[in-house]
Amino acid sequence: MSEIRMGTASGRWILLATVLGSSIAGIDATVVNVALPTIGSDLGEDFAALQWMVTGYTLTLASFILMGGSLGDMFGRKRVFVVGVIWFAVASLLCGLAPDAGLLIAARALQGVGGALLTPGSLAIIQAGFSGEDRARAIGAWSGLGGVATAIGPFLGGWLVESVSWRWVFLINVPLAAVVVWIAVRHVPESRDDAATGRLDIAGAVFGALALAGTTYAFIEAPTRGFGSPPVLASAVLGILAAVAFLVVEWRTAHPMLPLRIFANRQFSAANAVTFLIYAVFGSIFFLLVLHLQVVSGFSPVGAGTSMLPITALMLVLSPRAGALGARIGPRIPMTVGPLLCAVALVLMLRIGPGASYILDVLPPVVLLGLGLSLLVAPLTSAALTAVPDHQAGLASGVNNAVARAAGLVAISVLPAAVGLTGDAYSDPPVFSAGFASACMIGAVVLVLGGILAAATIRNPAATRDQAGPERVHPMHCDVAGTPAAPGALHEARSGTPRGRSDGTQASSKKPGQPTPVPVSKQKLLEH
Image 1 (cartoon, rainbow, N blue to C red):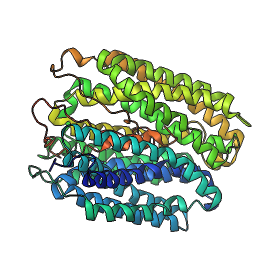
Image 2: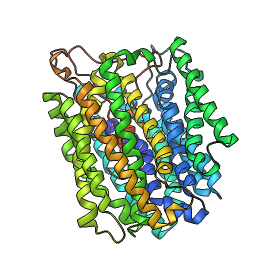
Image 3: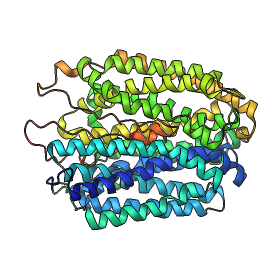
Image 4: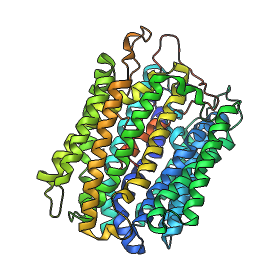
């Protein structure tokens, strides 16, 4: 395809469809976090249920997002994108109508499957439809507009919770999805990778999902059921066995979803190890902070949600400069200093207590966190993508996104119980305050370790890369999304390297000498 130009009617329709489609998932991540205390109170559920409402979505998204990109390449990117949007809308409807927490959690898991289909497809459509300078401009517009949508999410979610009902946090996705489907069907051309003839790695996807589900269940339910209870033990054993089976399948199959040989690249492995540590902290802290502001500090849902907006603003303004800085001096220093700034921000969050002032207590750590993320995320993304050959950039981006998602999933499953946030803790301000303080200190330590690991293992590849110059990384790499869910929302966009194939190769329309477009993340950070 690759013939559509920016500024034309066709180009505008494609941008509108892809921005709205990917924004549905990004907005959903942020608004759900804001609504959690109200949902828990309305349904009479404990803290474990709130954890499942977040991890249920992240679990299926992390499990199937690589599969989603491969499906688009094989069966048509527009087709899979539209299926993903419809799937997400139906699951959102089920969430909004769910009479109890069990059905809500199940519907959230279905939402994750829809997100895994539509997220890679949104960027894949742009990469296939535009070429050259127009492709770079289209990705920039898609990423920037997606960031704006993500920033609106917390305010919209807080307003819906306060003025209407938490159920509309999910129901609002339905009319938005209908608009996206209409535009896509009428105005978005189809594309596929004609070379993508490999078989789908169904066994790998199933074992990967079982591994994440088993371990997540064990971590979340152990504090209430007991570590020795049969369900917890059975799920832990299932998770471990499934993880082993996943590794065996990925090593032996001809068309693996996750080619393990890519981790033989030390720079790539190091970048993903740093990603795991850092996004584990971001996933858990953003989840807890929005609750803490409402439960302990008395913020309204709108106030808690919008309190994170400075992070999004700072990343929009500073991430391009951080990316340029990383291209000049290499990623090691930004990846070392960024986590240390974020660690200081978490220590400052200890000041956020009952009756906290937004200006004096909340804004300083939020601004410092935004500065740290702005410095860190673009170089981290670049380090992961430039560590591998150009033809594997799509695979590298998808793997890096999956690592970030899995890190947040594990952290949200483990950290709350480790700091005493179980049962009815979210309705007990003193208990929640103590648990949040412990979580901040643990998170600060992990971030320091992440910075040390980056300093010790990340090399600056600029001098050894080909002389065509460093690949350019767009500002909005962060999904673990500048608002509470920003880490996840922003990172979702990155997930989409839609052109990566299950066998680890990547079809490309890149002409000789043309820079390889780097898939962008709307937020690795939040879901977050």
